[in-house]
Length: 162
Image 1 (cartoon, rainbow, N blue to C red):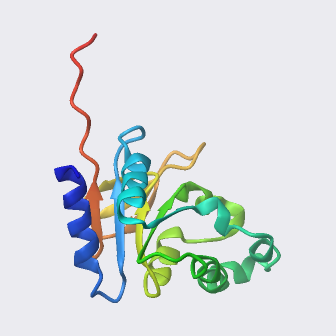
Image 2: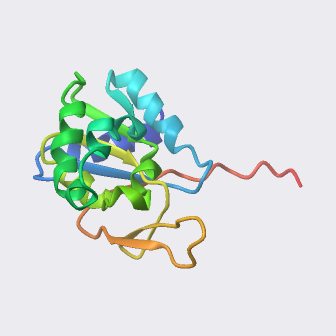
Image 3: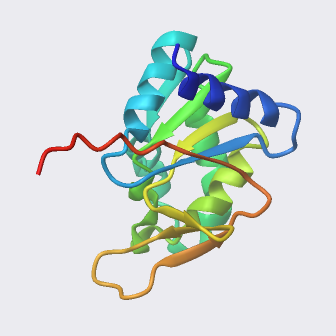
């Protein structure tokens, strides 16, 4: 296992005793967030979960005004069907669709009270805030993450090719 994965595993171990057991993995598009999650899934026998699977018909049938409050229960039931110590969540961007009426970080916080989660954030981390840029919007959404464990994928070394 690489030193980088060892570092990520140490982050996961550090959150296991907390109330919110959540590690956010950040990095630029193409930096390897998904690859790191898949490597952990293979090596540790943890479950890799595509968040698109959490947006079920049952969830979509809820009144939009109820979705934010009911999402942790509905999506938690799906996650409870997995049999792993840690769940690796990818494709979080599906939770940012405005029609879902969700605060994805708040949802992750609530779910992490029941499960140990490692989530690949589809945006960037800056000055204590997780940011997500929606298509067509000029300003990114900003979420206070100063109390969270955030791990950033190291950028691959430049190849030297022009």
